[in-house]
Amino acid sequence: LQGSTSYYLQVRAKNGDELDDGHMLVPELVARLSKLCEEADAEVVISSSWRVIHPLGRLRKWLRRAGLAVPVIGVTPRSGHNVPRGDEISAWLSAHLHVERYAVLDDDMDAGYGHEDRFVRCDLQDGLTEERAARALSILEGARPLHAEEPSDPVAPAVDAPAGARPGTGS
Image (tube, rainbow, N blue to C red; front, side, top):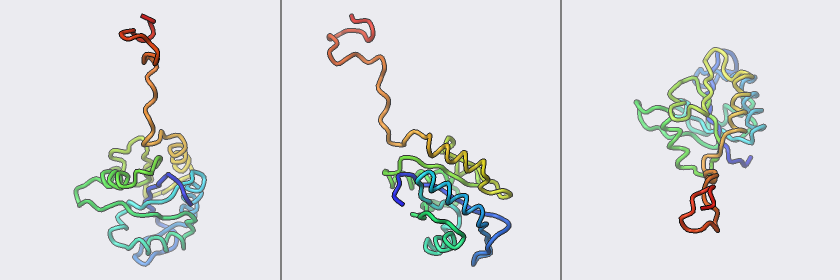
């Protein structure tokens, strides 16, 4: 999939396929993420602490095996123990200026730091519910592109306005 949207994910659940490290992926929740990404033409970037412990190839394999049908295109950088995950997401976005729309899904509030209007908190009990997926889709479809031009000033003088004319007065 080629798209300008990157999608952040942390998947944790109590039921599902056990991974090599004892974590679980619930196929129903992974399918919901896959559907969300397909509807939004989005890709996945992992900001989970899993990125520190496991190589990207292993994470991709686990997610594919659990049913993820969209690309996992990368992981956010690790900046240190006391750095909010939201700052790491910002660093990834700064290095990938082609990204115009994104949503952050995580169970940890620090992932939303700096991304409050694009953050969907997924708790450990329920994960990515239908309601949360709908909110994320709304964010992805309705968010103003990151690098959009500012709207024009409605009171700016016309190009042919006489020098010194005040906007909207004709004089």
